[in-house]
Amino acid sequence: MEPSVLAQYGPATWTLLLLAAALVGVLIGMGVRHTVEKSRRAAIENELAASRHAAEAEAKRVVAQAEAQAKSLLIAQREKFDSETETTRQQLRAEEKRLAKREDLLDQKLENLNTKERVLESNERALAEREKGLAQRDRELAELLSQQQAMLLKVSNLSMDQARAMLMDRVEKDMEREVAQLIQKRLEEARERAEAQAREVIITAIQRYAAEHSCDSTVSTVEIASDDMKGRVIGREGRNIRAFEKATGVDVIVDDTPGMVVVSAFDPVRREVARRSLEKLIQDGRIHPTRIEEVVAATEKEIHKQILEYGKQAVMDVNIRGLHGKLQELLGRLHFRTSYGQNVLKHSSEVAYLSQVIADELGLNGQLARRCGLLHDIGKAVDHEVEGSHPQIGAELCKRYGEKEDVVNAVAGHHGDVEATSLYTPIVAAADAISASRPGARRETLERYVQRLQKLEEIASGFEGVKQAYAIQAGREVRVIVDAENVDDRLSAKVARDIARRVEDEMEYPGEVKVTVVREVRCVEYAR
Image 1 (cartoon, one colour):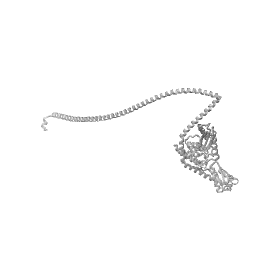
Image 2 (spheres, rainbow, N blue to C red; image 1 turned 30 degrees about the vertical axis):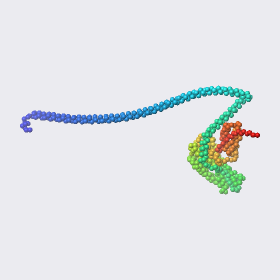
Image 3 (tube, rainbow, N blue to C red; image 1 turned 90 degrees about the vertical axis):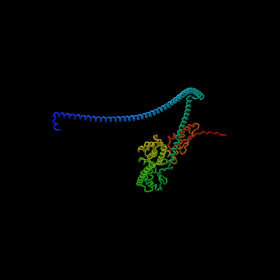
């Protein structure tokens, strides 16, 4: 601006002009700011409106989706509810039918019970009437009996005591007939049930085991070639024979029998040692006390070794495991022991096999039955050294060496000495009887054979009504002939049973004895 123009105005004017210009600038800035704020507010409002519209649209979409899911869930729940309701209805219908059927059955049973009740009432009335009739009949019979008793006393001239004794004797005979009839009926029923099965089991056991018919026996005689050798056996003043008897514990019998010396001892092992030692001395020819002791000692070692081998071999043959070594040794000693000529070790093995077969047929433990059968006669190995019967000794040995209670009871009770508490005890007893009674298994001396036959006939002849009794089949059967006038058919069965029981109680025998009672009536007339 030119200085002339500036000079026209003073400083106050210029101040006012500056203030006015500043005010106008402020106003313009405020207007511009207002405009900007207004534009900004409008944009924000537009954005808020768009966000609101988007949120409303999203909310509508979510609501629609939730409504759709709720509808589908409602439909599914309704279908499930309808299905469960239908199932429940079907179950209710089935239960209703079952209850209706049960109700019909109950009604039918109730009707049947009513019918039975009416029948029972009718039967009770009939029984009451019958009881009245029986009571009346009893009174009539009592009166009739009294009249008959009085008449009999009058006719027979018997006293009351005599008549009572006669009546009691008649009643006793009638009771014996009824008891015999009942016993025979029960025995026939039991025999019909058990005979077939028992025969099958025993026949199967016998067929499945085949044994030799002849058994070795212990030899107790020694052959001597000449009388000169017999004199050398005796020695000067009998010193050799005394030294021999002292070393072996046996009795040597030298008699006039040519070419033979008898060795006698209760212990079969000692007897075998003596026999072999004497044979060795005779073969060697050097017979004097020192040589006798040497030979006997060597023979004892040899026999002991054989005993162990025999015992182990028997256990292996029978397939027994876990047997104590002492019991094996005792089994080996049984090789030198005989019973009625039957080798006891072979007999024990045979009983073991038979026991297993019978146990298998009956569905029992065949291994345990075989063990019981092998050890049943173990007491015979030491019965000459220990007091008591061989079943008792054997049971004590088995218990001492850890055998089971079934084995101990089978050993102790195979001859019926103790009560059988195990199923294997009667099995072993049956197998023992089969082994002992089969043909060719045993033999006995003539004297004992005759005594047994005489005892059988004596027992059978001791019963009332028996006329004659004969022991036949080598003592396996006793044939009894009874008096036909005093013993009827029913009493014959009772007589046979009583004889069998007495034979079991009083006699010892291998196997079984058959008792046959014969009753016959012979009517003889002559035509002239």
